[in-house]
Length: 200
Image 1 (cartoon, rainbow, N blue to C red):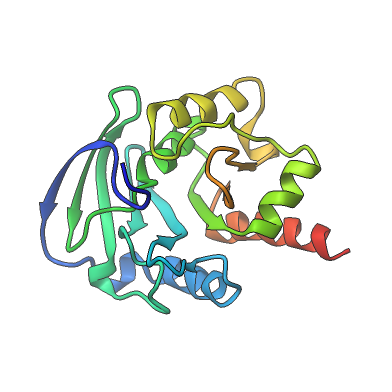
Image 2 (image 1 turned 30 degrees about the vertical axis):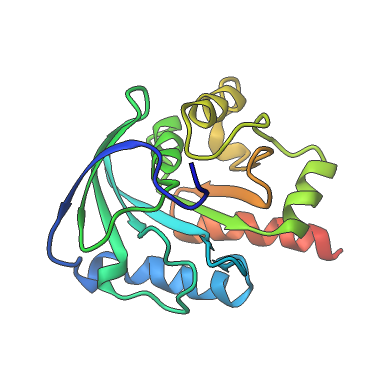
């Protein structure tokens, strides 16, 4: 399967674009991360980076698939995940675009704790290398968007309160890093703390 494409089983119902009030806070966060190059597009045209926030127990709003190349996103670039089941590798969404290929990994992180309210996925070789070198939490060398990745996320947090160590590096997804928090501000701050450690 080619990188950058959706790999999970899902139902997608194309519908009207989301209302701006539903994603304006995500967009503000995304603009800052895009400016830092943590969300973007590779030379081969494959976009990277995605952000989501929880709506309720089993739903969240997330940036759409292959939108990394866009400096700013509009309503038609956000998807609403209505339901998901990481055990069944299934996701149902609506909106004007399909959700990011990392959406089910986001869902798995939300399942770690009811207190998780936002998830950020960025790409950075510098951050990725730093986290591996300094023994941050990491998944095994498994491909993103797979059942194996879901299993790995559950494994590394099986004995850890997730919000006390709300970040991990994806060993099998070069440059891929995940952070999360009770809200978008907290998830973003987790990333900046790592960047601060690199700059010291």
